[in-house]
Length: 160
Image (cartoon, one colour):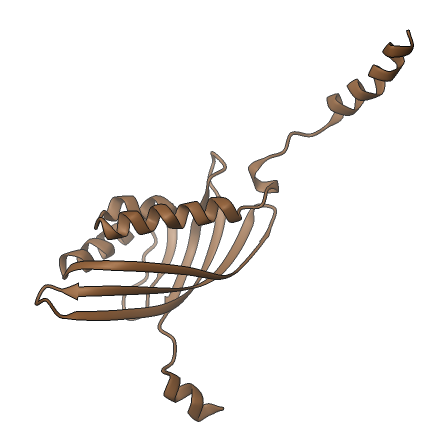
């Protein structure tokens, strides 16, 4: 009987506990994994693989190009880049990640080292702000992506 009295509070505790959902968890590991898969797809020139990191209705805002509001439009943008170049190496570095429940905001830098179709190497560097939310299955994906190129160091030093 005494054992039953000890088990009763445990049973009550576990029967009243709410299940933990993905939105209540730290998304950092999932986001790191998403970027790892993105980089693999990018370097394989797989535009469809790249867009798996995005919600279908993403707001994608690149500098010098029209914004896109679907992942299929982003795939077309990536395909254009891949067709205009022989190969590339993509490096992504998250500088800051903050989250609360079902929203995360990431500030990051990325570099793409390209070789164009004429065999000339060139580099694109940018910074980005990403708004992440979980999809219906709880997988974190980018809802909004805004990137631009950083100001030249000479311009920054002139303004200091």
